[in-house]
Image (cartoon, rainbow, N blue to C red; front, side):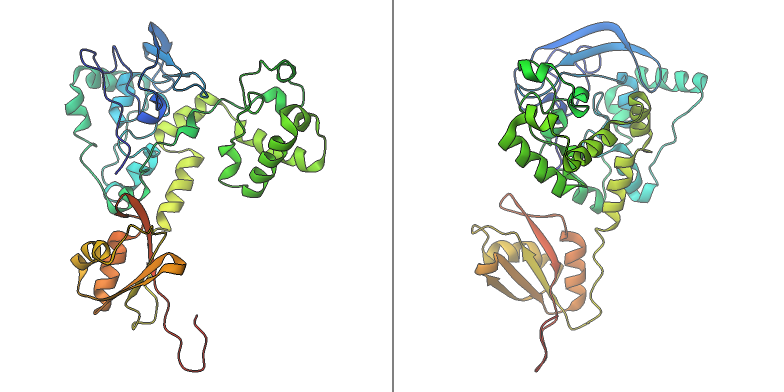
Length: 354
């Protein structure tokens, strides 16, 4: 199931007394201190003045704050802080692109006068009326892309720009609140594209510490720092607007990933077997039959304990095609998300398996 939006405490009005935020931005701690400042911020998208909120979602997290007004957030169903979709915890551009193949995407006004009038109308409507336009729509791809658990790495302290330049004096004193000076050695900026550099940096920090790595002038460390600097370039305000309108790089990456979710059936029409992997010992024959029988008659289910996998064979090829279309990236058994793929063709006599 997708990550649920944060619930507004009883007696408080969403967007006025409590921000419109997702569970990720609110953090795992149910007890947090939140600062409200009346008419303190200007919305990064519309320019409207609104009540801002600031809080720290955890002991190892940075302080977070709302960056867009509640009307602007409600108009698209996004978090006021991270601008992710409130229901699926995905970039809003991905949600709009995948919902009914983009048929539900609403073009918001861009000019100042029309924009002001539009958000005035949103502010007058109830939250339920506004959310009715997006909250009850779904698609198979969207459900597969949705996060099943909060991604709290989004709340990590910011990178220390002085550390990247090799000139942070506070890391020596132990008072720098930014990464990696503060002792937090997690770098999602590298993990997605530069796994080897990410692994190497963590090993160096664990072994030598932030001060020694900062002063290291080797080509390898300089390359890592340059990749981190690339992730920090650009205007923050423009990045917020791009995220809201779905034109940022993260949205493009998610859409490319969504397009790869379509599993093409193998050319060999005799293949009627599906591979089910990443299973735990708690998954039984009955558990799999309950999930797969809805798409057609299951001939056999064979377990491969050494490979931690199973092979589900249908009597008809069409049943296997329908099952993988529905269950690929979306199969959860006993709380565990399982991987579903096409099985390989059986080797003929005198040949090896493909």
